[in-house]
Image 1 (cartoon, rainbow, N blue to C red):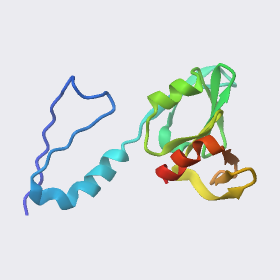
Image 2 (image 1 turned 90 degrees about the horizontal axis):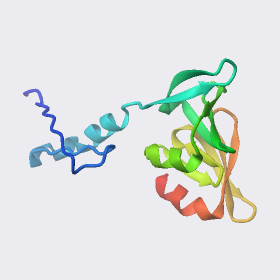
Image 3 (image 1 turned 90 degrees about the vertical axis):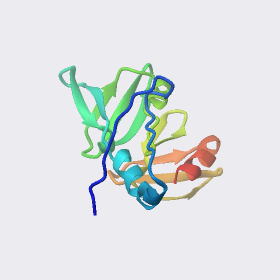
Amino acid sequence: MSKMKVYFQESQEMQQNEVKVITHPAERSKWNPIREAIGQLDTELIVIQASNNRNVMVKLSAVTAIESEERMCGVRVITGDRYLLNKRLKYVEKELEDVSLVRINNQTIINIRHISNFAAASHARIQVNLTDGSSYYVSRFYIQNFRRRL
């Protein structure tokens, strides 16, 4: 069995967050492992530590939720620490089009990798509990997108 060769090529026609993988038809069985390996590349987010106003890098996989706070965002990580992000939520959502992040209401984006459980709630909403103990509601407007992403 020979080792797989990997070639890199740039293209201005592709979006900044896109990767195109071309394989021989016999390698089709390896597509899912390749997709998972590329998806696990961890993006880092530069956030502000409120106690000393310093920039800190946190791994996107450690982020449980990003919440709108006026003209900034609050970033909650799995350890329970909270940071600030000097961007509005709508811009964060566009920049972080990650498969694990999903918008659940007008104020919140959550990381679906950190969902411990969810259940139907009143007024056609879903209550989502995360592994850090926090709880959020998926509004009716965002339910279809939430279900698609799970």
